[in-house]
Amino acid sequence: MCSTGRQPDPQGGESAANALFAALLEDSAEELYEGAPCGYLSTLMDGTVAKINSRLLGWLGLERGAVVGRMRFTDLLTVGGKLYHETHFAPLLRMRGEINGVALEIEQADGGRMPVLVSSVVKRGVSGDPLLIRTTVFDARDRRSYEQELLRARKAADEARRQAEADRSRLQDVLAVLQQSLLPATLARVPGVETAAHYRTASPDQLGGDFYDLFPIDGTRFAFFLGDVCGKGPEAASVTSLARYTLRAAALHDPDPVSALSTLNEVLHERYSGSDPRYCTAIYGVLEPDPATGRVHVRLASGGHPPALVLRAGGTADFLPTPGGLLVGILPAAHFATAATTLTPGDTLLLYTDGLTEARTGEDRTALYGEEALRAFAAGRAGEPPHAVIRALTGLLDDFGDGLDDDTALLALGMPAHAAAPDTGTAG
Image (cartoon, rainbow, N blue to C red; front, side, top):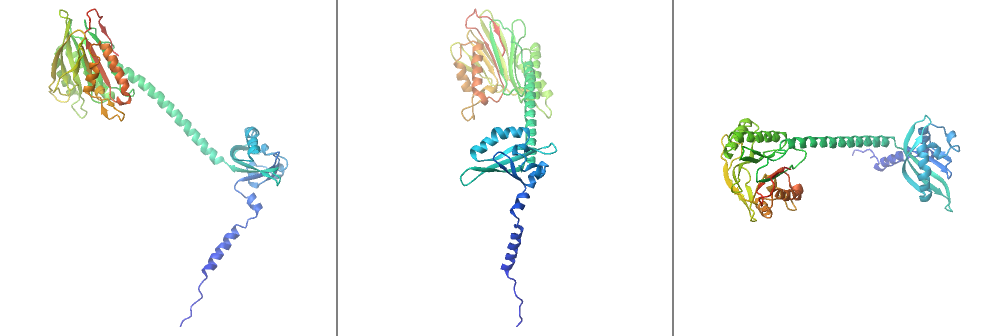
């Protein structure tokens, strides 16, 4: 039988490791005090330094003999630190008996300033009388650098935000001017007819695509239109401008509503039939006041636009149906629906864009306002003059708040309820 060697004692290995670990910890209290990674000092109650470790002396750049018994704690601080110590640090320490993590600066022998975090505690005797103050000083240079970097970053962010706000304000001013240039400054004065208009952009940061106008064709007839270009921004604005001036030019050539919309359709389709198609909805009409009867005859055509509303003096409001009209500019040849009506004293014709009927309502902003709600609202204003109708609708738009996320254009044309009413023409 073969003999085996003696197995090593596992407990012996563990004991050796423990002995080695204990040897590493055999630092004297003095070694721990002097070699600590922070500064230590003890002062009398009047602040005179009684003991200080090498770490803090190294930070100060001073010899022990020049400090112990010769300097007070406040002599180690900068001017600002002295003031803070006398007004805040020392009173709180006397009241509480300890204070922690106060940011101060010590003044180095070469004139430098070193940020530190200071904690102090009062040591008391058996009778409770204060004997001395023990203070710990931590190097806060890395923290100060980090704080300064954060401060610089915050200042830079604040400046960038202020600049962005200023740039946005300037942009909004420019957009407002450009938007106004796409709308008529005033509406033409039509004999025997009152007019009012309103334009509301959903966002001051974007150009809208809604448009309207009212202008004379000849001595007896007047053309009007209202439309909505697909999209927003500069591209939509360019289509808006093209549509408005095309319709004005077409009206002078042939004022027939279908003819005018057909001309606009040809222009838009030819101009935007490539990779970036553009189109719009529009209502175009002609007013023919009849001085003999005191009435105004209206003929209009619609290209995919929401139907006009007729508010009667008797207190009713009904749509003027124009079903089947195609979007303007989407096909080379388009069908446009026509309609006609006659306005008598107290009647008003209301045109609007779908920003009104597609406004989101309800607490969750998921329901659309809709045409029937608009008809009911308009019926409550039937018999009122156009400017009163527009004012009421403007208040309605205000009530939608953030539920109004599309531009809205409104145009109201009406007969005064009494013959003596002055002609007016306002746009807002």
